[in-house]
Image (cartoon, rainbow, N blue to C red; front, top):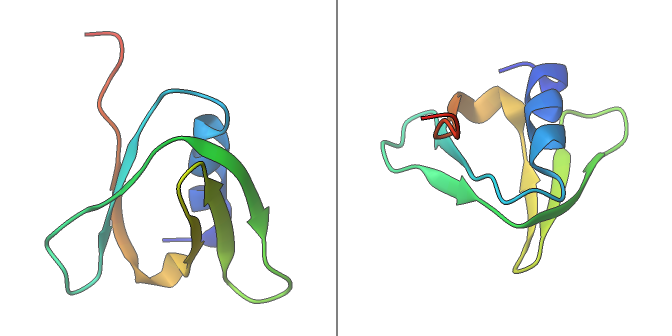
Length: 74
């Protein structure tokens, strides 16, 4: 996944109650992100830092195969 695309998706989570699941390349179990407090691009590299109320998470978007979120309008 491209860094800019994942960053845009994560920006929608900041300060909301929405959740996002990420499937990493080579792994079938999703990583769940929720309670996002802030996101930041980490320098000229590919990393994105995600701070939640519970954790600090660093994501390399090139390893993300799928990002999905449950629809709130259903």
